[in-house]
Image (cartoon, rainbow over all chains, first blue to last red; front, side, top):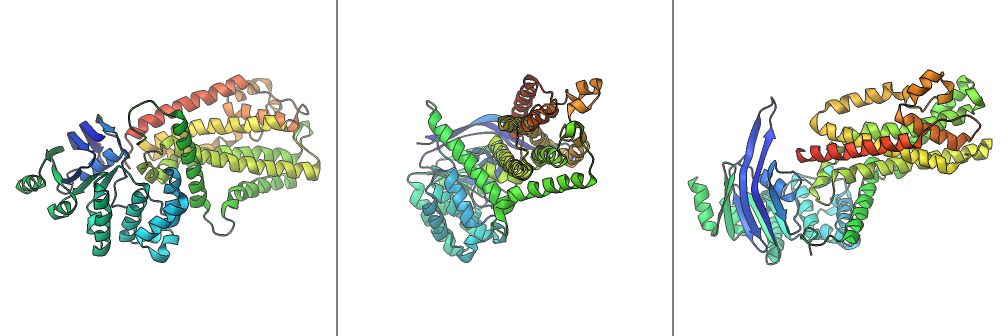
Length: 217
Length: 265
């Protein structure tokens, strides 16, 4: 089981008709059980890469083969519905992914620790609360591969710690791809690394090698 | 284990997931549109019910007689309510992608699922409303539909036609905001031509031919055949109507598929 990217290209149209190439031929294989930290500067295309792998956006050229279930990119408020409550979001996720509804609602409530807000519309949440809800929802689904944005690890420290524990617990049976512009964040979660630069991705077997290459570039 | 593993496709499982997704989307659409405040989900019926009653009452009060001796209230209500469905589906299509694109983070949900769920809900609500009106006319005025099956068939055909056009509008809206800006104007201006508020036999012969080029006219004539039976002449061509439905839906599926690839979420 793996995720394979073959010569993936993506550019975005800018106002005024020009376009910006973000990914220019990304090739990579992510195998089951790997925890890969993808390092890149601001604007290097880290979020774009996660969006393409998750399937919410399509590459312009190239192919992405997915042989496992993949989460949505975690860390931002994506994949949630603002006008309904956290609990209703949990019910929705349970229905879509064929999970028992009562258990899912209970699990998300316990993990996200939103208190009374759990029954309030998501639009009233702080960004930290949205991150917690998003992570709890995805853990409830139990994906084969988790796509993580660095903000998951940032957050307030106690939740970051629980989040780290939950993800490390799953690492043995699932794949993890984390993007960050900070080597330290990646080091806490990942066993190997990659650097995204100039629209291309370079894999390193050793995380320290990746970090060294990232700082050198 | 995973649904995306290559191998023989399990159609039973695929179908089950499809129904689950549509069911979840319909429930979600209901809670996001109406919430649980005051009337809640009842608003689904309340809106077309109130608008239909208002339009019907207006024409009853102004009191013009109708050709063929059709009951004024029944004619306007049964014209307006299906038109309300047509207009809702069309007008809401351009915003449906933007309003729901966070759903696309779940790979099991496609743009088509979103559109189908919305339009099934809209269609179900309006058909429920029409049933309420027809039951009321039957009980109060003893005007029961002559062939209810034809009314249902006509409503479903109109829904399928609106859905196909809606798919294209949704696809177009991915490229330009212009679609959403002009569609409300267009549905307003074209209102008199849809067939909701006239019958083909009212028109002079040459105009009849032109009116019958408009696909929705056939749906409304079919609905009226079901309502009034042979009390008034109705003209429609089921083949022509179905051809439009298939054409619009195929074009809609194709354009939506193309547009999806360049959608920025």
